[in-house]
Amino acid sequence: MTEATDLTFAARRTSDIRLVAGVSTAHFVSHFYMLVLPPLFAFVKDDYGVSYTEIGLAITVFNLVSAVAQTPTGFLIDRINARFALITGLLLGAAGFTVAGLVNSYWVLVAMFGVIGLGNTVYHPADYALLSRHVAPERISQAYSVHTFSGMLGSAAAPAAVLVLHGMFGWRGAFLGAALLGVIAALVLLFQPDGEPHPAAAKPRDAGSAPTDWRLLVTAPILMNFVFFLVYAFGSFGLQNFSVVALGSLYGTSPVTANTALSAYLLLSAAGVLVGGLIAGRISNHRLIASLGLLATVLAALLIGSVDPGTLLLILVMSLAGLCGGIVMPSRDMIVREVTPPGSFGKVFAFVTTGYHVAGILAPPLFGALLDYGAPRWTFILVAGFTLLSIVAVMCVPQRKAAA
Image 1 (cartoon, rainbow, N blue to C red):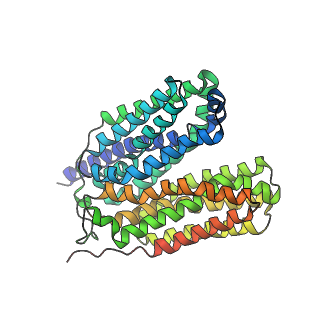
Image 2 (cartoon, helix red, strand yellow; image 1 turned 60 degrees about the vertical axis):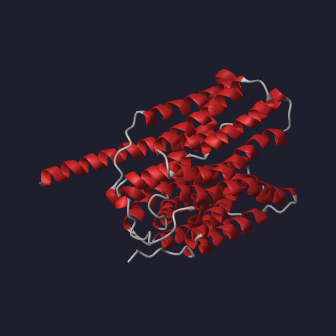
Image 3 (cartoon, rainbow, N blue to C red; image 1 turned 45 degrees about the horizontal axis):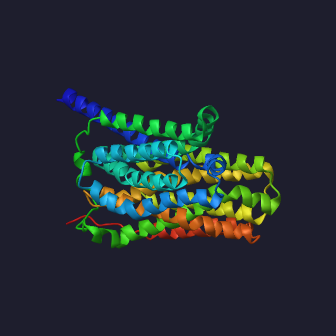
């Protein structure tokens, strides 16, 4: 009896590992795809004879399509095979890069980034649906952390890989190389079995009698999670995308020093995600973990915005903020999972993570305007303010009560 139980446990664990590996591969590609164009801006601009604003339109279209279509896609994924939806998204992204690389037209490029944005809508709902349905509850926080970590690796790998491909084959060849990556990830998932849903994932203890249609998205727990993701993304976007320029304007920090501090922040964020997965698996108060981690970012931003920390302290403070920020992410995902009824993981995660795309549309002009008007210090003040708001939001997420 014990031997049979051990074999069942081992088989379930192996199945979980295969699933997490496949889903994480797709998540790596999704983040890689987001950073294919930015390193190639100058080359594409010169080739088509357009402005940076016109090239940036492709990124705007990507985010608009993703923001509008992601929640409907989440509803669809709750009704169909999430693995095949993920494969479809990967192939859509690959097709978009292929056409954009082969057809010599600026407007085709913009249109194809709309297609890539449509493919991007499947990742969060399908990834979280697959992990939440199939991974054992005792391993779900680690699964979330590996999933998030893989996305960070995709973001880190993209700029260097894209520039290497550009050096060998030009920017069109880099697009085709990105397309090939998506096809390979799709093939990995194609030959991976679905596996059986985990029995414990079918009846979350706190799902209660919540609705499972569109009304679910306007319930207090889900709306507060959306607000949390939105304001958290504003703060993260400002720190990651504008801190280098702001430091140079505010303190005359060299680009080398500022980029080193940013790299340390991103590297420690990735490490923090893995640490956070272990913590979230052992401590059930995920709101407290998230709040403490976010508080470190608030303090770091206020310190950097108040005084010139110098090279060593700047790198140290950014590293600590990155580590604590990474620790937040698995707990963030667990908070969403706690308030999600069975069968609704796709739509809920699709809806709340749309906050990232909304921030991606609104944050650049906000932070850009601060720098244009000579107020770099306000970059860090706003980062601290938005992060503080995210603490308020996450602490206000109501907990569902178990059904009687």
